Length: 376
Image (cartoon, rainbow, N blue to C red; front, top):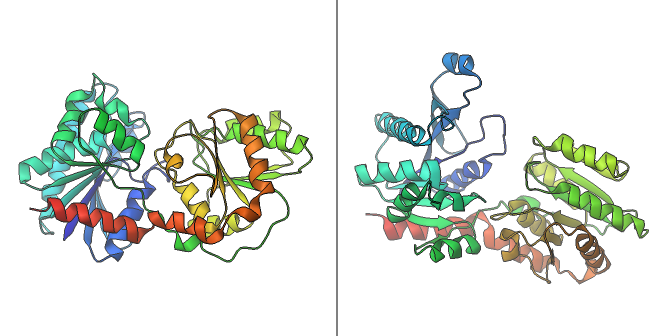
């Protein structure tokens, strides 16, 4: 079986984490003996026209077990969204035909995110008689089906096997009168399964792109409450992003510089080692479609305290952590203290068993079942 993955995002721009999952998914398919490549339309910002003028417009990147075929275009959606989508499809079709010059026709087209990749891929699949799977990852996915975008979103639902990364997303799609399956994000759980040692101190950790909606400042506020009760807890923040300075300033203004460490972006291996030296993982987001770092924490053998931000609610319960109200840093503090006082009650084997529901073997098996069902 041959699969062409067509993502809306790919980590080759300013944000190296944006779309990283799509790379990992392709690697997992390749490791499971599925022939896979990626087509990517790279939308370059209008604010640097000279840079775009002189950059190479077609690039082939050799990744781990597959190739990424990239075609660049200017991002003009702010001028005309409809024209942008039309040009996006034209670029994708041209890239696909160029791909066929040296490669065989794929059995499956698998797009990531409804617009733009999902819509353009459905047009491509319809024209060239190739079945299409679309997987929705975006936390803001409902906007793809609002009045402005409905014709595009509905076209995708009607011309693909539509999947989402979590049950709550699939339910919302079903409530729209469409069919949807769950194809969860895959997580490399094995890299996090290292022997743990007991840590006496309360050491919190969070791993996140420091972007809008992650609410890292709420974790810092909770930490301040915890320490006011005499716990002398610390927090390590792994990740970077455009709100990093905002969170650093919030930390300083709360007088918590002594207790909080920003370590920046780290590799999976480095994150695995960092998790070993902490005992509670914290998520404070407003909304998450899945939240891969939460699964990584469970695989490492640590309980998770999370806001009720949808995605994590599917794998976090009283047996592996605590769920708290969004924005309620006081409840967050209370729950962290509770989990810390009951650390010995959390079973390492059980935590890792939950994580393994999302390992590459499990997720690729689900993807293959979908591919085989729709293959013509």
